[in-house]
Length: 125
Image 1: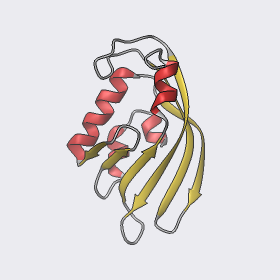
Image 2 (image 1 turned 90 degrees about the vertical axis):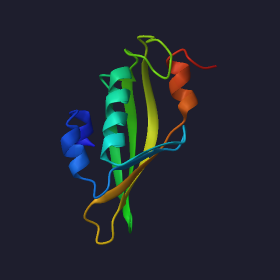
Image 3 (image 1 turned 180 degrees about the vertical axis):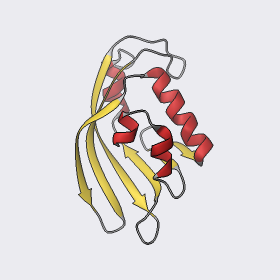
């Protein structure tokens, strides 16, 4: 999570045995290094200051559950919506699943309420 805050995506991807992000609220899946890098470029273009705060980690048998605040400002295009310049803060949970043996991450599955973010950006009711 620190490497994502630092926008050091090479370091982030190096933690994966197989890079995969699943965004549960939108149903988007980014599978493989190229798609995960595209996710980083797209999300950080819309929210260049995006970062996480207040992370609490819980160790599980086959992974780690992270609870955190995702924070950012809408400064670039987002799914056809022009930048609003508005900030957001949303509590999220991410499940980091590990390969057998617990060495490399095989998936980051992120749970969040998209409506909370869209309302703060002035894009939803």
